Amino acid sequence: MVKLEFFNGKNVFITGHTGFKGTWLTRILINAGANVTGYSLEAPTNPSLFEVADIADHIQHVIGDIRDKDKLMNTFKKSNPEIVLHLAAQPLVRDSYANPVYTYETNVMGTVNILECIRHNDVVRSFLNVTTDKVYKNNEWEWGYRENEPLDGFDPYSNSKSCSELITHSYKNSYFSDGHVSISTARAGNVIGGGDFADNRIIPDCIRAIRNNKDIIVRNPYSIRPYQHVLEPLFAYLMICKEQYNNENVSGWYNVGPDDCDCLTNGELVDLFCKSWGNIRWINQSDNGPHEAGFLKLDCSKIKATFGWKPKWHIEEAVQKIIEWTKVYLNHGDIVGEMNRQIDIFKNKDEMK
Image (cartoon, rainbow, N blue to C red; front, side, top):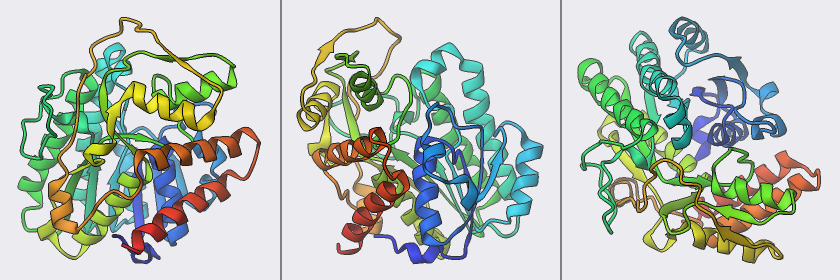
């Protein structure tokens, strides 16, 4: 459980705020009254959630490359943040095969650069590096991975995020061992939600098929993923940032994923979407693309035991919220109002626990 009032008036620095997760996170913090500085490239898609969510005018919005250490450091100094969330990344497996150098530069050196900013700042109290469930060496086991499992992602994206974890661990041991900055990483599962327009992602592919009046193409219908609504990890990230702000002892490495009942195949997820939307179907059509994991789950016992955290929305409700958001968008409705409505529903359910 996280009380968002904690963030009211606090200076918060977010990298990657123009992305899908970053935009939802920034909207939550705007509503909470935080003083947000966002540092990111331009929104990665067109259309983009960042553009339709009315974010830029309510924060210190800086366009910059996480690889540009000097610009990042200058922006960081001006914002003087107490809390830092690092989301900037090249986040797509397929793109990492096509552009491995850029992926490593962004995901590895980007992590070094933000940690250097923190190392040379006396105000930061809480830092969270957002990585991925794909950091683990995936043996395609039937059980979920725990935080003490080997980090050895297969593809350039996953591997670069494994490296990002190790860099964070090294900086924590080398420069922050006295606890003056609490440092954690969060390894979330596959997030879904309204406003994701990325290529090669299953829910955006569903929505594009609807708009184009075509069947949904599913590349890997039997692959199992830990799907969760985007608000699940975002509220968990804020919970970690808040709790470690005054208690360095709870900082660490945390899996953030759904319960086993919500780990399902890509095909099952699309079935849910089609059933909820109505009058649309999907077809299995492999495109013989590069290797992607076939089976992946997370064991979230640690975050549950440490903070009393647990997921709030099962996958059926998550899909329904995506459909509600999408219908508002397709009907040219109030996107900010719909985002705020969903955030409030989630927050109130969270606070009643």
